[in-house]
Image 1 (cartoon, rainbow, N blue to C red):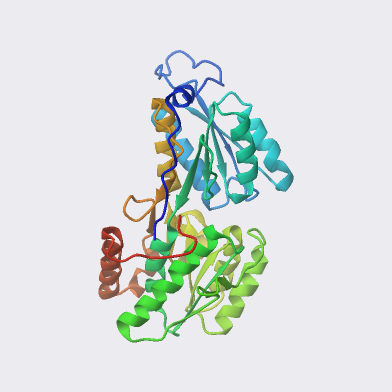
Image 2: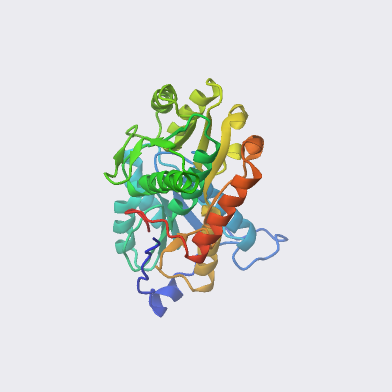
Length: 354
């Protein structure tokens, strides 16, 4: 159940000081003279890098959209390892830009420290919660969308076995997994079936994890094990490790993958398109555009942005090349569930819900 709590808004004095400050050279004549053209944003990635096909990439895409819409200048500081995290956030805070965006739980401590050291700046942290007067958490109730994905997986499975795994046992990961297994359970209840979901025990809050988000081979090995147990639809929640799951599926007939964060059909290598059933989406792009706009007009607050089905912050992607697997009846059931969740008639609950 969505439990985002309202934190006290930043006071008027701080909000006024949070307007983006100049950190780039003055715009060249003839560029339109946009009032925000010499104002800037700094983003710090986690160790997944800028092109992680996940929320680093989608956050950056959102800031690029904000460049187009508002005329600000966005720059990214890419962390290649743990030792880069603190220095990169320090550099971003010292840049002269008054909005600093950090991505991932690994950056929570550094974000907290720099927010305290720079109370005049606005910070946003993606996929993590930091409780500070000038930090806006950007989080997503992905359980809502992964519930639909779990229902879909159960509905298209030919073997009666599906699976999920994570990169680490952390709330942003297990939130997907909770929704997925609940969706499978809902399909079983509606249809009198007994589709099994491997890899996650919601009650115990424990399951299958690779221990990192970068070692593709670990994803392949774990997925091969699931396929050997009969799983024919698999949801990896493990960043780049998920590409190993996709590689395993390509080599095994009748197996499909559900991607997360971005539309894998658009972001992954074309070789994986034939096995991508759908993706559980986080619309980080929309959140970034909104936050930059709020900073520019002085309405920035530390109230969390929570992406839901209702506000379009989460969703499932089109079925693309595997649309033929999804009957009109099943698609109609999924749409009905979406509308029930939006209306509040169906609450998808998780201990990790934002």
